[in-house]
Image 1: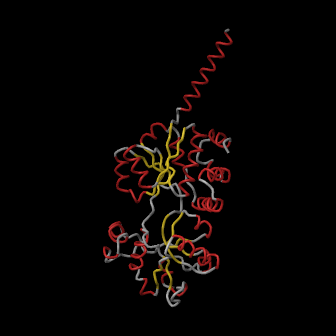
Image 2 (image 1 turned 90 degrees about the vertical axis):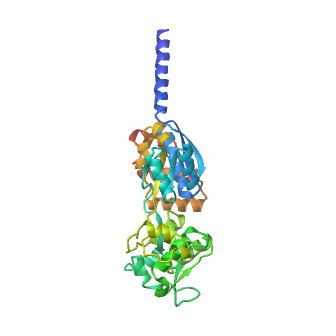
Image 3 (image 1 turned 45 degrees about the vertical axis):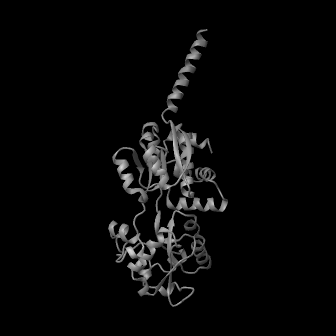
Length: 334
């Protein structure tokens, strides 16, 4: 009887200890936003938090503005792994100051953002043309299909917000006077197709795109830095992003910095336990993310499929994000 009682007592203590450990991280909701990199990140986070930290995680469909509004007003979901903050900068600052939300990582993906790119081959063939301004002096290297005497700059399709940005920057840099034409690709497929065609044929291409994307990963486009500095928020917010009739005097400027954060609610800070430390360390290198997006595109992989592939392929990377005792727990899930 004594042995049985001691055994039962030991079992009870063990169960209490297990329960206490599980409570270190409670129920967590994570936004699975509707683009590939965000789907991957949400699923990686889910696997790591559940296996390594004992959380109970639910993924919630979302998008930048809807997810932020819900987190700000309702306190859920608890985590936005990849929040593009420029769209909600004012509201996010207020939410952070008032303690409703917390930025745990100001750079969850490196080498991301929008801007003007050239093909990998062009970059290697002309290493001396390594800035936007230097390329702008050579429109003859990018002959337009309709008028080869002009240089073709590929902008955004009509209706996209970036169409206005590119059109105003085209004017700000006096590109027409330099011999350029601004080309409308017509659609997302047209823009992607122009890059694929040029890259596969070894032809020059110069235009707008963004990263992380599978196309950047597949064709290794090179982002050109601007020599001119960012000309300030007033020029950008009140001119560059506006229709041309509302932007009469655009100033030359570097592209506005893309602010992408991992953001959590105050509730997460209370129930997430040590998982906050994971988010602070969790950084996807841009090259790895773009390679993963190529994998997702070519294999039609879901976010969950890609997350397991990432954890199996990039062990040297993710093991630096978690404490030693969590590594084997996570490996056992793979």
